[in-house]
Image 1: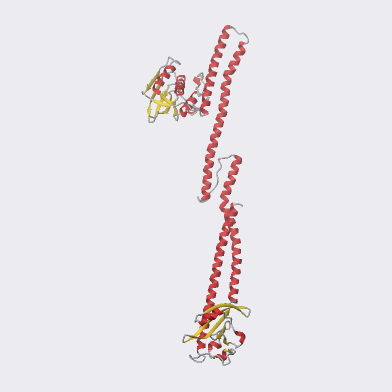
Image 2 (image 1 turned 90 degrees about the vertical axis):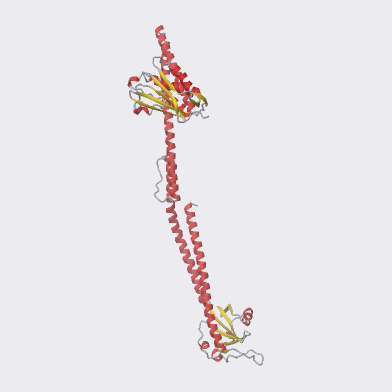
Length: 480
């Protein structure tokens, strides 16, 4: 069962229940109101009849029992007394006069069959001076019969009865019942149709969300959004939440796509970088098979040694990056950065003894990390500075808020602005035209970035053409 049908049925059920309660209440009020009106009319008629009865033979009248003990037949009203109340009694009401024992004394036509029903319980109540209402069948009609005693000197002398048919009232109530049933049924059917339309309009945004979700799943187009311009009710909040989820999915999907593209580029670059030294080695081996001269053999062997060293460095760099990508955890121990810088600079000077590497480091700088990884990071930064600078290199280290700042500054050709944002990309070598002979695989600065980020640090580079470049590394300080 759809939620639309459930909403419609629930709405219709509530309306039908409300109409039923309203109809029952209205019927009850109408039934009681008409019954009370009948009782008031009967009470007024009975009071007039009782007053007239008291005037039949003066106030000290007492009906006498017949001498033979037989009940005399009833007399007509015109013989009983000529009071107007007896002569012009409403036609729709039946009037009777009884003696204290409940025997018929007078009726409109004086017939013995004119007696109205009176129960034993009612007679006892009347003899005790209490009025009495009861309902009974008279001439195949349901009658409401009102009886009241006529009391003189605390003694019941007569009992007057006034009755009125309930046929008209019952017919009116039956008509009301039929009207309520027909009207309630029509209103319920109409309400069902209106509820179906309204629930469809209310749930239309949800249908759009469902349709959009299905299309997005089929097309994988996370840039699409649910079009909703209504109020920010529950449906509006659902649409907003769905759009926010799509935005996060789009961002995650773009990141995955970017990662996959980087992996494809990485594989392409790796295959290219490995192909060059391997091709060179394969070519030199082919030359050796042709029995070259001793001088040519020496050149070939030197070339093969250089390419083998290059291949080893490239493989080592790739393995380091692969371990970083795999989330390999580096050791975390207290590392004295000040002494490590001195040691690293001393080894870096052997790369180029003609230029000076100046160090300005505060004493006692310590971080938590892997000493070998940090040393490798520093060697890469120094090697990069020496390759791209024909003058001295400045290295500084100091406390910077909650981190240790290390700067490596060279005064070389600098990096163009359009190339600066790619310096940490793998296999990227943004050499200027005049520096095309600079060797390297383009992985060094990528390794620096991976190591720094492993320790929740930061690395950045600033550069000006023909002025040089500065690499700035921030490493969190050792917590005591």
